[in-house]
Length: 104
Image (cartoon, rainbow, N blue to C red; front, side):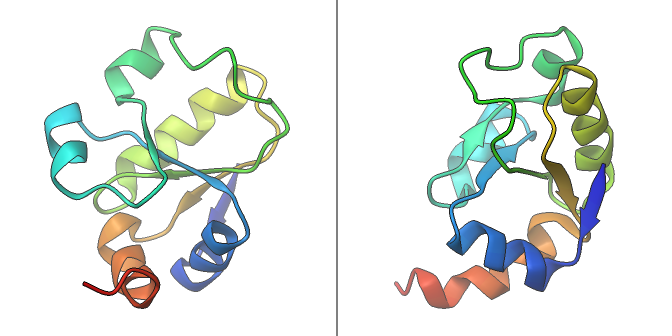
């Protein structure tokens, strides 16, 4: 499992990596990264990762600060996903770098 610094993660998002947000659904609904999918850690631990995902697609796993996403990335790898990385510093570090992409 790779660990990406926020700048590299932002570049990967811009190039089409799938952002997998492992926070609770209510938290995800409040401030998700555009285009991301929600796969709460509890669901992932029960083996309910999306079977329809291409196991070779680049996945960037995020949580708020990066600790939970590291565990989640390892779980995804154990399910056969081959291009998985967690974002160091989590969404707290990634959000400011993507803010310019989505002006409000």
